[in-house]
Amino acid sequence: AFVLSFIGTGCHYIQFNTSVDSDISLRFGYWYYQTWTISSNDNNATATVTEGSCDFYPQEIALDNTMKAARSFNLITIIIGGSVLMLDGFQGCISTKRNKSFRTGTIGYMICCISAGLSLLLLQSNVCKNNTLIEQLNEKLSTVQFQDTCTISKGAKSSIAACVLWFVASVMTGLLHPVPHVPEPRDGDGLDEPLFQEDSEVL
Image (cartoon, rainbow, N blue to C red; front, side, top):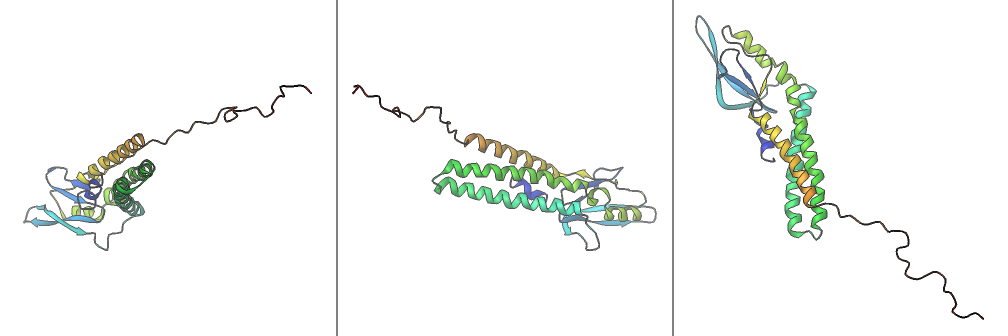
């Protein structure tokens, strides 16, 4: 789950396909987008994606609050997930209260699960629904047009898988290291002797 959380940091989180040829795709992520080149002739123009080339978003591209929130939740997942994994590793070796230490990780894994799920907010941002770069590219092309909305790529699929795995880790940790049950004292417990001694002899 921790490794899967890093995949979305590249430029393969979402993609835009053409309405004609699905092999031509433009991919975008939290911080990067995949560059492309346009080759044209006298009659038409076609877009060729430069595979494997990820660049930072241009400064003129305004990112909305939804995109910024998705970035933040992705960072929270990576930071907390890495911290909890390291703590569990150290606590399993040196902690004298292992069960109590591992139960702390249950909360951390659940936070990672929620954050990984909320990182999918990118699908509701203007990068996915009102992408300025895609709109500008469609204006330059005549024969090929990219779709207005995005589809999930391997980065978004990895976030969904990471969300499920973080949840499984939280549940399994809670089951393997449950909170010990302390029985409540019943009425009369602890009174081995009566409060008043009856005299055996009557004076």
